[in-house]
Length: 101
Image 1 (spheres, helix red, strand yellow):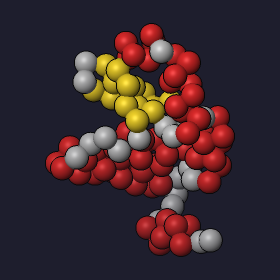
Image 2 (tube, rainbow, N blue to C red; image 1 turned 60 degrees about the horizontal axis):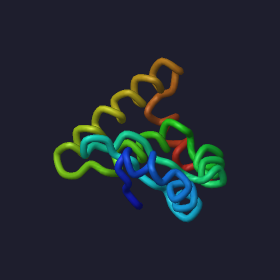
Image 3 (cartoon, helix red, strand yellow; image 1 turned 90 degrees about the vertical axis):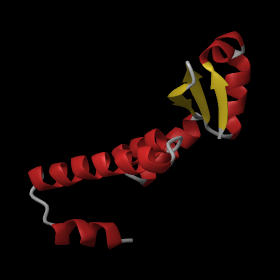
């Protein structure tokens, strides 16, 4: 995945758009990732093939490493577990849904 600073993204917007047609581009501000720019086709594919919240989790956790990545994953898994419980899904229901083709 390419990375650009927010200043470079502003000053070279056309380059950002062109690059995002080939692969997602992370835009950083003060050294921290703040947004990922991807082509419309990639966006459609991501939101149609897997639940959008899972795509958001992957995008948010992608730049993290080590303990930060583990902490982020635990937080998101807890949120998904809580939502599944609110939706009335048991652990067996979730497992069955994940294993369906």
